[in-house]
Amino acid sequence: MTLIEPDSVSEIRDFAAAEQDIALFLDFDGTLVEIAPSPDDVRLDRLVAPALETLRTSLGGALALVSGRPVAFLDEVLTPYHFDTAGLHGAQIRVNGQILSQADVPVAMREAMRDLVRFANSNVGIIIEDKRISAALHWRLAPQLKDEALDLMRAVAKRMGPGVRLQEGKSVAELVPAGASKGAAITSMMQITPYAGRRPVFIGDDITDEAGFEAVNALGGLSIRIGGGDTCATRRIESPTDLRTILLAAAERGSLTASSFS
Image (cartoon, rainbow, N blue to C red; front, side, top):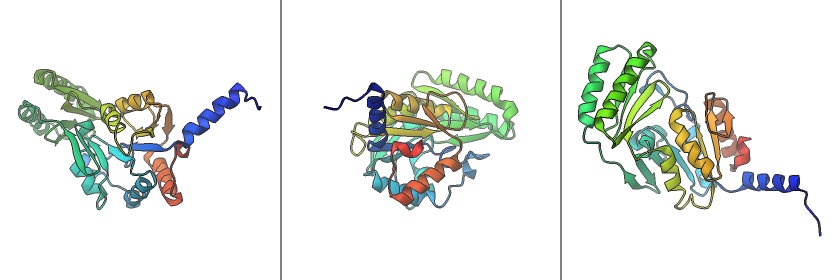
């Protein structure tokens, strides 16, 4: 009988975890693409979508986008490919071409949008995204208005009541259905085929991704933050460019495991 030293046992377990079949969850803005001055200015490297399709096949279908963007927007950007997607911070979830869940439009959203549009019309550089189920206010082009913008969004969220929560991010704040989060979306998707039984890997870049990191950590997965900032993610990748390099190389090999991100 061969006795294995404790350190060796730990190393074997780490290796086994690294090589376990993974389920890959990817944020979009700041992760697959660089942050742009406005939401409409993002540009996706033409090699990324076909690489993701190759990786989806190699992962047995267990690849999904988890984004604040609507599902329809991501479909358009990644055309002709339609990936499993948790859009609007988990308010929309589509797997295997079927909508599994979609939150209702909050009752007071129209009134909230009127307040946000008035603020944008009065302040150059403020951008509003009306996503119907959610609404985002961006101040990247007017950073001096951050405090005023946040005060407005907090007041609107409070007025709308417990059915809505305020999701803050990089130069943006968004009104989203209270039950929606990237963490809840990932946890839900991990219970169904083709994700069940795999080790989740989630990659994001923002405060909006922290709930996803927490969920993946709780599931024994791998959480990876792009860039700096306080985070509960267990690893970091320097930039979207570095992530694309990893994904394109993995697609060329036809294989992606947790160790690919070491």
